[in-house]
Length: 334
Length: 128
Length: 147
Image (cartoon, rainbow over all chains, first blue to last red; front, side, top):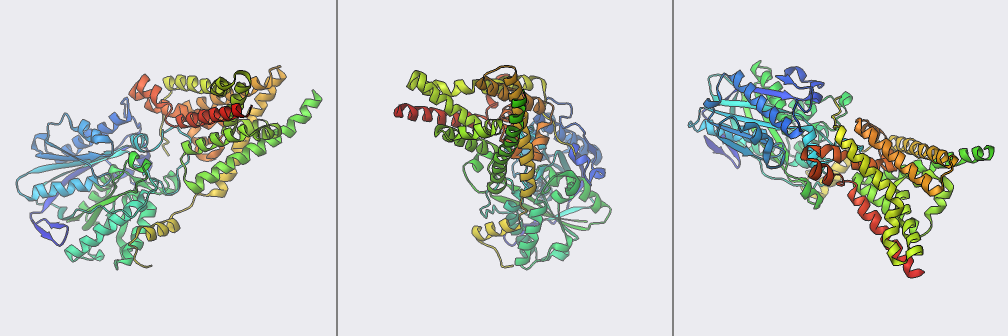
């Protein structure tokens, strides 16, 4: 393992993503990627008494699915890195409380999944651990309840607003002879360009994505065309367009091989999701369900995965604060 | 009854137009200022109380009937009207009693029916 | 495009780039739905008057009926669809006030009937009562001074 440039770590021992799993909710079931997920749940409560309990069930079931697919038992997992959007990361801790795996609770807003991949891959690369688990979840209803309005309130969502993905994604990392491998990680800085509109997360997070993207290219000496695909987490339609524009001003043309998970997971025309998907589960489910399979089938050989997060809550926006963004990147190669 | 019916439709028309226009102003506020619903309602109820207090709003009610009383400005104007009537009957004490007394029916209905509804109903996600 | 470094430049750029609300369509829907809700109220008003109630009682019956209707529609998960379509058209009439009381009450039932339903019922509607009642008291005090 060695440090490249300002922020990037190059991982020499090839931590492999052994397997992934994704379980999603009712809205995602009607989306274009539905066939790639391990399970689609039609009831947003999933038989539980509250959305918070349902979200914990999502992460719990996703973790047990990925352990089954990777053919490892929970006692073979050295550490788990998990997080979500709810206060004090309760979905992850309540979802994981019966697993008996040493637990790191992470908060990086919607960037948490890649934050987990960054930390987990370093743990594997160090040689001390055999397997680690990374998982995140989010739930449309519990997120609306905590951050926005009651579900039955008859208000209109603005055109720039995004739809929190209901679901959970999980990945088991370990040492293996098979790819995909995590080769570089570029943890991001907090970037705030003064956007205050809590219904425009894409614009708030795009500058952070730009910072991490440019730093990754500078640190590694790579250019956008090195990658088959550059995928951001949940910038949505507006944030995606902004990032393409901003990258151009820095001399990088990412348009040909760039996309965003928030754009991929819903059909904007038929699903009325406005600027696209968001939430911890957005990149977690799209990567674990769709992108990982694309890599296994060799449709994507080199992937730059950048998860974006808005480090805000209801209190800070009521106090008139702007929204700080963050973005973490991992390079994943076959 | 014939006399009644003729007034009926004119008031109905005024009601539709005035009620609709008051909502359009609110819609412009929503789209242009990104004010949250709670703020819009606060602006409307306060504005209604001021217009009611100044004695202006009653002309709108005379003209448009429920087109003026049903929007939340009407709720505010009713609070103000009640306070003024309370003052007339009981002096300063009426300033505290009159407003809520005049709108007690609406507030109690909203709280009571709201509570009953929460006992039996469950919020639901829009799936498509 | 020039590089963007300051929050001011970025704010202006985002404002230009972001899609606007379809304001004409929104206003049209708000107009006719809002007008229609008021007309339903007016019909109830005329009915009460026909039955011989005085005007103040008629207005109260109108309020209570529209509130009951809005709460019923919220409870069967329909009101938010109307609200999405009509925007201010269903928010500004008393129906919006009723919906803003019942929606958090339903939402927070999972936190119990006292601190959930009871306390959270006023998260959206509370400010309306605070400002409405305070304004009426001020109006009353001013009226008192001038009498």
